[in-house]
Every structure is written in structure tokens, then in C-alpha cells.
Length: 91
Image 1 (cartoon, rainbow, N blue to C red):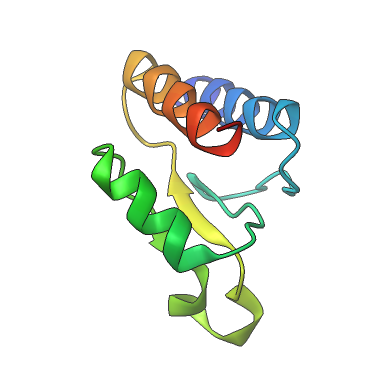
Image 2 (image 1 turned 135 degrees about the horizontal axis):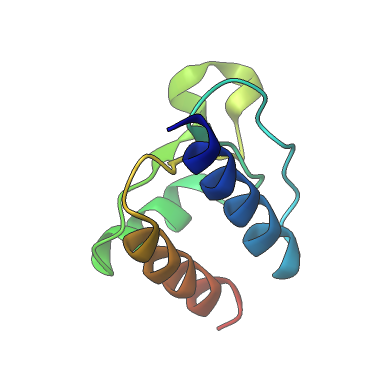
């Protein structure tokens, strides 16, 4: 499972960076915390597309303008979710 989570993490980091999002590589969790312009708008836009992410401000003031995205799901679903994220960012 460890190698699978590393695969998912590396995919998520690369996918976000490829569309110009600022993100650090997670070191010990199964979620990623990219920077966004307006976290609440981003969360709502993705929710309408059936992708659930959490506003970063939920985790304190340092989370403002970030979102928490879990990558603890099947790789195929993860790929599809990031295709939708890309559509939203590049629209």
C-alpha cells in the first residue's frame, strides 16, 4: 500500500504543478494542500462537478487560500478527479 500511496501522491503533485498550481510534496499523509485564489469558490465549483475538497481555512489561518485534496481513492478515480480540476483551473 505504501508504494501505491506514493504513486498517487506523485501523480497528484505532478498533475497540480502541470496546471500551474503551487503545492508542496506531502511527506506523510494521504492528502495534498495546493494554493488557490479563492478557496470557497474553488470548493463550490468542484462540488458542482461532484468533486469534494475541503477549504484550507478549516485547518487554521495558515490554510487560507488553500484546499485539502485527499488522494486516498482508486487511481482511476483520482485521474478523473484531476481531469476535472484541470478543466476548472484552465477554464
